[in-house]
Amino acid sequence: MNVLDMNEQALRRRLHNRKVLKKMEKGENLSSFNNQSSWFPPRPIIQKDKKAVAKLYKGSEKLPLRNKKDQRTSSCKLITLFS
Image (cartoon, rainbow, N blue to C red; front, side, top):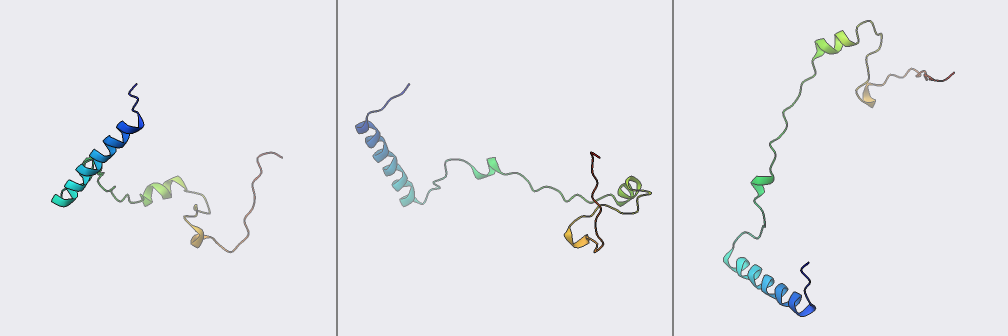
């Protein structure tokens, strides 16, 4: 275990601050890691397969609602699992 006393911590902090200031004066990058190494490419846009959805819900009067805008004004029936 590496235990440092207060004086040694203060000394290391001052040295680190001096290094950072020198980098700033030179205009160097202060980042401690490469941004591209943590970059993920954008995800592709996935299109809904309308034929598969139609086949899945074939015979059903109502298709599932995508969002609140698609909701109809008629009242909904609650389904209870235990009766």
